[in-house]
Figure (cartoon, rainbow, N blue to C red):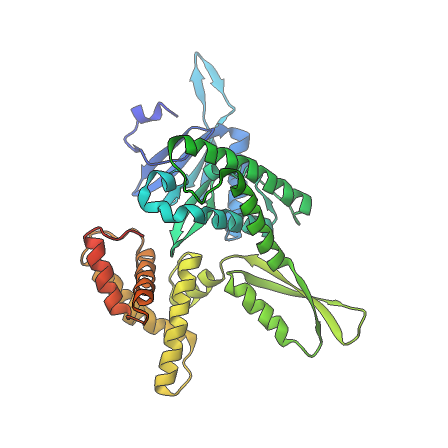
Length: 381
């Protein structure tokens, strides 16, 4: 594929991470696609894995297709070379850019939570990664946090139920690979003092185990305590997990029952926000916005002395607040690559100013200060 650029003006250059395979970017009809060259059997297999992951609403790049490359050299045709084509993940960051760009320093330590969350999400749907590394992940800024996306899945495999041994193997591979990634980057860039290369993998494993235990735990309650099931669901929702099923088991006592919640994905707030506003945000963005909508709901209900539905509050938020401020921001910037992230940055700036003033400064003041600093390039999120 290295010679394709000589034959097409569709090939473009974008920042990319390290890869054992040749990768090029193709701009077609104002959309960017990623072509990766690998053995045709692996290309087909990776495409099928990513398709299944996409159908499960998993955080991964979107597969478009796979194919075979016929290399005709001296009349010999190589039928083993293939490609997989995926959509380019807009507004994404390879992990190396988090260390190349000083403006992104605040996100470096958040790598640990992002990787742990990604692995938990993988294992929930029964997907063994087999090659977890920083080079095989893309990151997106998500309301002050990072969201991780699976990129390379050629070593992955789906299981009906993923075993503890398989999960532990994934964690061991992750620790070894991430230590190697950080050692490589430390040669070129100074790492944060708080980031101990040899302990990062262990920290991610600890965060993973805490999260896995939280979603896997079962409880024994009295049959009259059904409300505790709802409490459990709300707790899981608060950390972003959707609950698909509640399984009940009998115990040795007739007045008790054991229950376990089965979680499906880590997109609870994303799904909720989309269902009531039509806006497709990332999970942390959606969580921040849903908190704001809940505040609006409570405030309007109190003012009118009448309970307001969440959908009605969401409509008011979208029409009277979100669209108004994004339009005002658009008046000063020709192109907003990620309007929802911009709006969440305004919310974060409001929190920062309110903390400093020890009172709620309000969204209007926060917007004006945010806009002024952004125009002067004094503020970077």
